[in-house]
View 1 (cartoon, rainbow, N blue to C red):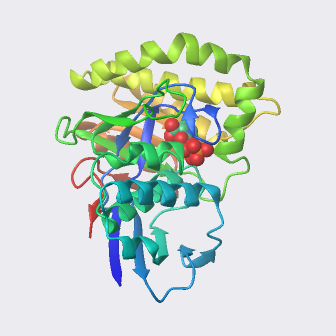
View 2: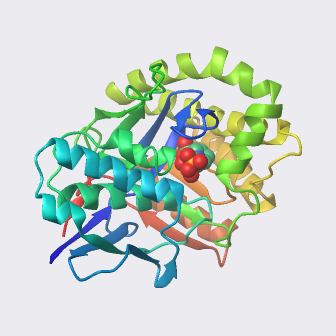
Length: 337
Ligand code: 2P0
């Protein structure tokens, strides 16, 4: 019997992934870029056990048994096993069935990158089980697109690639977690209920119906990715923050331009946007950037020096909210625990 347990981090995109050019391979319509959060407060944890006594593959997600008959899950397993076979893994081990237990210590499916951490963890743990070496971001991507960005720390770029088989659609690290140690992310949990329109179906609908999406992927994202990479490398927070907020706003504009529209932000989300702009205006420089994924929860990027004041003001203007102060950096990428 073989058992491996690993944890993997959440990532929060500053240039958003929204749209696929191939639904099966999960290759995107644009590059995206994210920051990886530390794993102290938010992570996925997966244990995989392989045994000659197991009669079939089984999976439990957050304590509940789910069907293993899921194309994305099966693709990831098949691809890691194929890589393991190529690397000369133990043939008996490859024949055994597996039992998978995975849990997130944060809200699932509420636009908090739960599938990203979950699939990154699943693929990373499988790779450990079968002693697969090298980059597995191409495999994690086939579980959930954004999962490929959770396999490294710091800031990570997912390249859309152009190869018909998706082989160059991989994630690479822009800078390690040690590069900008003052960077912090605060997540304001506005609502932790499951969202109405999943990212997968929302972006599918956007590709089919949104004119703005075409404009975004052709004229906006390529330059933004270059500019934000430069800002991250040179630790230019003002530029980083402005691009982050503009890209979040444009992604939600695309969601609204989708027909029927996909509405992810709510009144509280919009109040947070107003609050951040007022705060930055009062400070006469950009101290905090917001970004929203496919849900109403706000992710704030800011430097350590602005954390105390921001939290005090959030507590004042949004009393009773449920906030998590996530400190970025430290023990990423995924770890065998
Ligand atoms: C992102 N999101 O870049 C964007 C911003 C949501 C908004 O990646 O269909 O769950 O599994 O590839 O990875 C959510 O998309 O979608 C996402 P699939 P995924 O973080």
